[in-house]
Length: 84
Image (cartoon, rainbow, N blue to C red):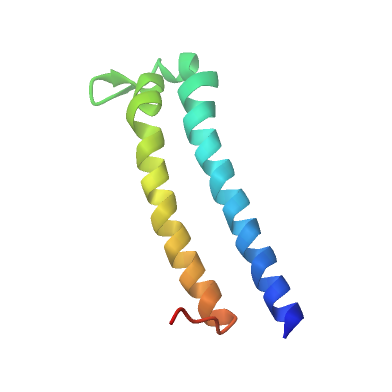
């Protein structure tokens, strides 16, 4: 039983690392590091680098929340972990 919970926690942490890496890439990478090349592309009348810095990282974060909920529900069912 102990190994089951260790594997559950390991998979949970792996999911968190991947999702936070995605958020880092969207916010810091696209909003700051790649802002200049992205500014050559327009989105809704705004430069794409500016859009990622102002709005895009927030949208990505909200999307990450939904992905996390979905993936954790799948993980909970797989390991028969229930919230009661």
